Structures are given as C-alpha cells and as structure tokens.
Amino acid sequence: MDISSLNNYFELYGGMAIFIVVLLEYMNLPGFPAGIIMPLAGIYAAHGGISLLAAIAISVLAGEVGSWILYFLGMYGGNAFLKIYLKRFPKHKPAFERTFDLIRRKGFYGIFISKLIPMVRTLISIPAGVLKMEFIKYSIASFLGVTLWNTLFVGAGYIIGEPILKIITRG
Image 1 (tube, rainbow, N blue to C red):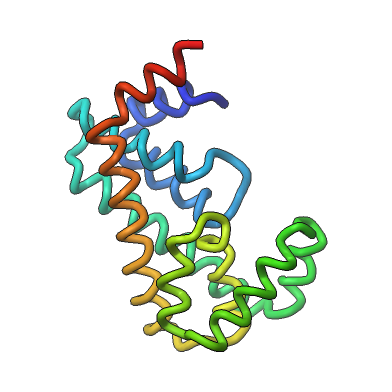
Image 2 (spheres, rainbow, N blue to C red):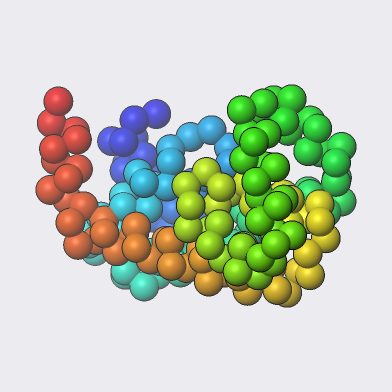
C-alpha cells in the first residue's frame, strides 16, 4: 500500500479509516508510521472530509484504544506475551528494557514522555501492563501524550501537508 492508496481509503471510508489505521499503528503492527498517517488525516480534514477537531479526536481515541490493548496484553499475558513478542521482534529488546526502567523510575511522567518518542511511544504500553501500573494513571498519562503527539502531526498535515504531499508523490 502506498500513500495514494491510504489517502484513497480516507476519502472512501472517512473517520473509520483514520480510526483503523491509527489503531493498528498504535498496536505497533506493520504499516505506515505515524509521521505519514497523522498528517494524511490532517490533509483529509483540510480538504473538508472531516473537521480538524474530529480528525484529532478520532486519532486520539484510536491511539488510546490501541495502547489499552497492548497494556492489557502486557498485564494478562505478562512475561509470556513479552517473550513471544521479542522472539518476533528481537531488535525491540533494548527498547523494552529501557521502558521497564523508565516506568519504574518515572511512573506517570515516564508514560507521558514515552508517548512523545517514536517507537517507544507504542512499546511503552506492554511494560506498563506487565508491571501492572495503575490503569487510571496509565490511561491519563497515555491520553495526554497521545493527544499532544496526534494533535501536532494531524495539525501539521492540516496546515502544511498538501505541499509536502505533492513533493513526496511527485517522483
């Protein structure tokens, strides 16, 4: 799937496409990175397909739901899930070790900050679940970080996305 196809899905399915693609991205499944998905949602909003506020709200809801899924996989699957995950993605092991340490040291603030760091922002949910971080605190920290991250990227797409998309798709 290329950027044009993703854009066509947004045009065809609207907010549902944004929700599904962002949900999958937050679950750390292969696909497009947030740096492409979020600005495309902003471009879609700029074209009038949806309001900017709706695009941000849908992306935040999808991000939080995706984060909760990984949190609960970590909480209920614990170390067994982590072993399976790391077997499939062995390069993520150092990142997981750092996130466990970050949660132990910084808790709420560690989750918030991690939601602003590429790759770590999606992985932090599993260790938070494994460590059985209080769900309400986790959710609030996650929501704040997801909201800031998604607002910046969707907003950037809304404001300057069209010229950048033209440059990217020109070649």
